[in-house]
Length: 96
Image (cartoon, rainbow, N blue to C red; front, side, top):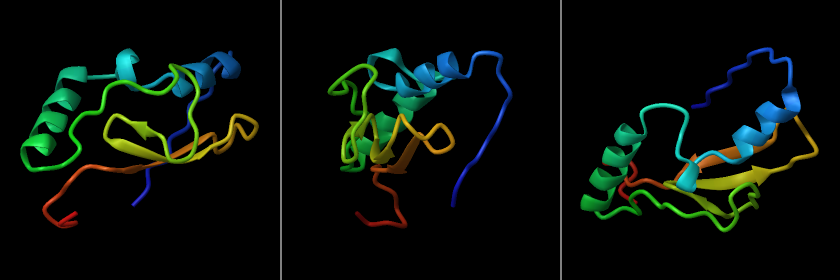
């Protein structure tokens, strides 16, 4: 399953900087309280929950935790695929 969205912007560099700063203490673009509830429910089920606190507020490396996501790829030099993440949240189907 993947989600790919595009939107033209007059300042692509500024938009990418905001993407690199997502999560952690900066929160998410929309409905932070819903993400918090999701993390709390995951922790209740024995998962990682909502991991707040990144190693760096704007830098990501492969393997880093980003709230309840795990960074697979982080490449500032390739604007077409700057960040790839997977869920690190417990779900009934994954049994992990």
